[in-house]
Image (cartoon, rainbow, N blue to C red; front, top):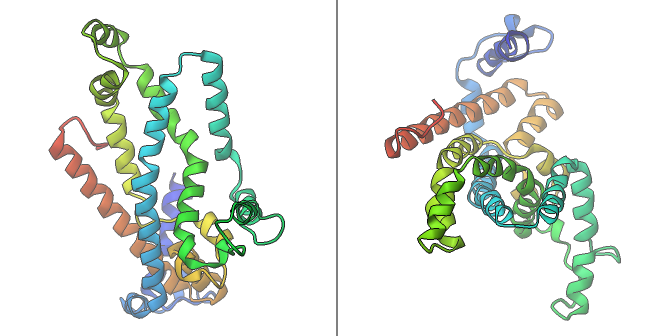
Length: 281
């Protein structure tokens, strides 16, 4: 922990320096908050910040609830063999690299003869000509959110399924005696029983509100959709590695981390106000 987590944090000082590789962290001149001033004046930074927040918020609003619904549906399957097959199939996308996912998206959304989606839409008459979805910035948010949900739903449902198995079966038996149907049992027994798990994962997910999916954005980004696909992580990579402005990229990353910590504390505090047993610390 000390070697790999805390010792590298000495590099935070680069955000307050005019860092030069030859001088190192301890030899570069200090410039105070100059890098942050330059950062906040950069229109590309605000565009990347906006995209990061939009994508993270969409993934949080949509992607947070779908694994819960999926876990509830799986729990209602009585055929054990079929349930295991569905679970296994839903987990597999998590283990697929984003490089492969990006290749699949290019094949499915392409405009040539391999573009499955365009071929279907043209044949059924909804489109006259194929649409280059990945080069239109208007479609990027939808593509990013759908692919992220597809990749993470099965894996995200594991924790909820584990929490559901801890619910006392006698509660369901008592509800059955009282005449409750499946929906009533889910609403009044299952969901309240896994509320603590839901709140904890919501707090952890909210902590990534200012942190995007680097692999996804980097692989799907191109010059046509960059207005929507450029996020803080790709911004930091571009300025820190490609342009050699290391201090500016560290300042952007530090700003991002501080905001994420503040959001985690705020969400955790709000959860404790609503329920004392909620929250992670």
